Image 1 (cartoon, rainbow over the protein chains, first blue to last red):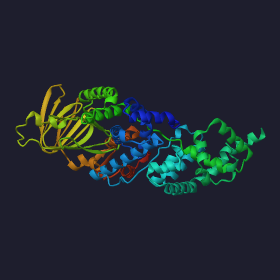
Image 2: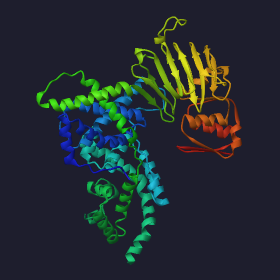
Image 3: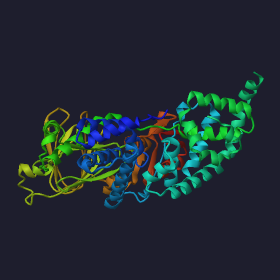
Length: 208
Length: 340
């Protein structure tokens, strides 16, 4: 199951304001509430754990040092996601210039989700996830990211656009294209599977 | 939630619907009840909605990376950095004085702890991950996969010391001009589990794994301090081209580097072997890349590939193994299985 927590928005804002006025404890709470989420998000862009930690470090140091000039974001989590994303990109780009050990690596933007088959029951569903995984991998990094923000993080178009530095209509187009591509590859195979998996159950319930 | 409106939705439209997505994510009891009713009411028309539901659900079955074990360490780093920066800003604000005093005390504590306990920098690589880094004195090192190097942050102030486990290629900067007269502050020392390497402006490769350390000197001059098989303290100075292999249980082996390129090929992401046994190649796959290697028969370990292998990826290496040794090689992201 995802590590989702429905964050308490009101409590969030009180803590944010306390932190802005210099409350170190509130700052620590904000850190604790978001560290795991940020690590998980960062891990989609790079497997370099140290780089992710460095970015989280830089993010929070900046946050503290510039706290007097910060506004009131509607969602602290989204604000942190966006900032982390920018930091990760900058660090990855800089590294690309410094050392070019592997010509295969493209530090042009990379986004990767790792699927977990262990919780899925039934061979048919496991196979379906494999098909889904293959389909997702045919998408561009940006498409994969917006799918992730929509379906995993549960964000709206506006929120996803804000985090990814897109305007909302670009976000619509991006997601529309991504879903179109997914649908081509997944739907037909899947419908057949669903018919096999669920049909027997439904007939039973119809009898009852 | 009323699902009947979804009866005529296409798959795509469903995946774009905020309410539907929110429903699949939360799967609240009340909604699930209505959902099941919806499936019963429209057994065939609901199939598309079902496939949309399944697609989103399956997508959400993901591995999660929380890095929980580093949560407090990273925060300590943050506190330390903030503490350092704090001493630069001078602003006195009377109303906030007491709050600031509390924060300042915390900062003092962090600074104290920082200089006493967290002054070390550590770089660790994952399997298959190669990192280049520059040390505070300008020396460079390339760290192979599954390796770790630590050094004090105030490196340039004095004695340069580095702790290594795994494999690294060092390019140490000259500080001293007279190599015969090395002052203590100009030394550069690499600490491995079983030996110390004293360096002076030099390029050398150290491989320290499974209680065995192999050091190959490419340019310059280094001195090795170690305990020999009778546990006596020994020193040995190497010249370019020397290769030594040390393990606690055997006599120190001293050779010449057969092929310098092969010794450091890993740093260019090349896999190079010369007349290597399957056993040697498996060791690299396990140690540097983290693969679990399963052999159909232990005897296979002694199979040798004559001549030189020089490839740029694990995939290519496995290809060669299967072709030249006539073996069946199966591999996925974590495991390699080799059978006859």
